[in-house]
Image (cartoon, rainbow, N blue to C red):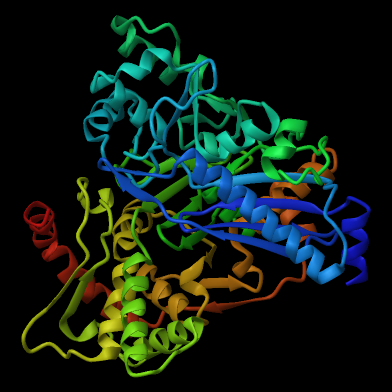
Length: 532
């Protein structure tokens, strides 16, 4: 307590804040990189005019409330005010589209990663580049806006992601960490910058439109981890802390995406390491030792925060449908006067799944709150539960099939990576909400990917802590010290965790479930068409 208090009072604490899909979370760490205070703000995206979005007011007030929550936690724990910070960094949901004019006005509502409205754009850009361009990438949104003839495009002065926007508001710098930038436009890992050939190809593609900009002019500058990306301005300090207590001048590291912070938080930036982040969405990241034989629409090529190529399987849907069913069970209990603690309820229901038939007894579920391009569903989703009349309809099987459903699309993509491309993964780390209940999510993921899964003791800190660690790396790194070495030797040395290896019967059960899951996909597509 005294060490933490001293770090805060002397201005030596370091801050990481991440904008997740349902929660904005702040983590303050001390000189030993341990969390000493937390701040949270819950929020939710809205579907407005067919677009998943958050307003600028949502973003600003959410950030300020999260920071105020952190300040309150500091005051309650240590009896001091948080006025000076040694370094900070901000991360957010990757991808999406936030275009601004010269005056800094947002030209369209923020189009988040969750939108699957850029099908025509990716069909043209992917073969043009010879590189998979996912629907949620910023360049796909920009080109789709061009194809749609949207009037705002000619007025774009720059466009960025959510993390890039926050960083710009705090520092005035139009920059991105290289991992986050790799979700805007393809990266050349040797040049540590956007791929110049593809930039030229894009400019040639839109030349006849006669826009007053070239693509590089409106993209943020790319910075690898460890570089300073600006300082907190007076205006930025007030944007973060309207009370006026926070002092400006603090250095900021490059803003990153939740994929990059997940890799950092799980010590998965070395070649042949990987991690799975499982929350509202789910994605796996594997750092490659060599290029794949070809591109696949199911696999995205991004980078680590220090620029190494990463094969990413990103699925739009993970825990949203699980959460909805848990809420229903909670409402059922309350109808009988039973008020269960939410975390306890999750634990009880998740653990029940361990008693289930390995193949879920004939039950199948789709957790599609939004479209799922990995399984060919681009135009939205409909959560759906299906069973045969003679299926074993038990609570255990019901919970297990929904946990399997949360991982099924991820398995479809990873089967290409691990089986077809023969990619080797020495270490696979899990983090995110799905792993809060010990053992269950870990065991299901091990069955899905047929690989050992490790969850570190720090996994619950997640992305915000990973962002704070990236800020620490900027502030503390020695000459020539790589991010991988910094994490291995200074952050995770002595850290403990639990590893679960796949059970052969679980693997067979998941494969049997997936066979039914894939076979019934046409019904999911019909539900999208028929249920508007």
